[in-house]
Length: 451
Ligand code: NDP
Image (tube, rainbow, N blue to C red):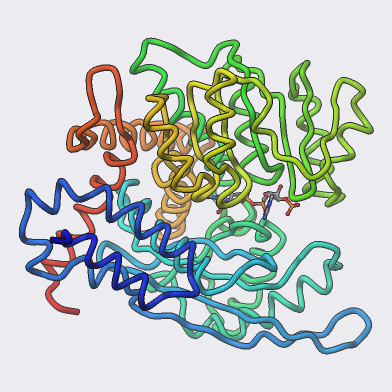
């Protein structure tokens, strides 16, 4: 007979046929919390799974704007308010041509458990648009953001739903979005996170996801009496998460050797130094160029068009670009070439087959919702500072981030005991993180009745 979680997975599959990423995320969480569901009958009795896979609210809207040639353009905007059992909806906005409802539902669903793991009072949500900021002028990006916020402002608020950045939404976009919200609502509140320091942002927020992911890796290595010193590390992506992952790896004595974007990857066997990283930050954040230029500028590096970095031999891998960027075959290549740790900076970068490869190889594997939770955790710290109308020092925020990542690690480590394959030599952090994140949300839903 099909188990409770299998029945719900089947019903999600039947109802969401055009949303493969959402189904993948649901399958990953529900199938791993089975031991808890069997031990605790209350979740089935209260139909928690049937409720938790359905967003509380989904908003889809038209975003008309005018380009620099005076032509009218129309994009689609979304906000998925997934679960508010433990706090206001919280999660990023993604601007990328691949954005659709299924992608945002997968991201929102993941966000619910991730936010729960941070121990901060934040529900889960996600939003964005199929707008592509690449190649657009600042004025076009501003007009788009203003139109997007003109509709979104009806649905969000500091105590209701607090969006942040994600792919394609960085400091520039958050600025334009915040300006329009303030103008329309005539209020200065912490309605968005990832703000600039001059107007309510938090120190360390830009660094938080990358730094936090490396802290998580540090904690995993410590369980084996090891550290990052001298480790050769692959990093994918070259945006916010990738940049600060490289920076923290350098501070801890590791040797990052790759970066990528959607066109290809660079391999610098001599290592990406802080000076080279500063050059990359200028390239990506100011000039908005392509990573191929790295190999034109630094003769130590080579550029591989149309490829991903996973066949480069390494000790550790930090996928930090996008979903499903490592498949089963690539995961096997990583392991064969010596990789013994994967910490996910991106959301769901490894497909289900790839995750199976990590687990059966018994490497240290930090799944996204635990390893990259430092970003949203620091967004939570930004919300606290906004509510207090105070700003904390860099050291204070970094110390809090460090402790939060340690707590997330320890919590996932502890709940990994539910996994049949966890032993004194191996920790199944997938099961650990999913169960630890689920329990708090599910118990809160039970407390709050059928709403
Ligand atoms: P950015 O927009 O700053 O950077 C994204 C990077 O990934 C770019 O290098 C981009 O290359 C590359 N990329 C995007 N789409 C693809 C694709 N389809 N194939 C290959 N490469 C791609 O985003 P972030 O660094 O903020 O986000 C990266 C990942 O981290 C995402 O999965 C995001 O959800 C996740 N994340 C981000 C958090 C944050 O705080 N920013 C928090 C938690 C998770 P290109 O320039 O060619 O598009």
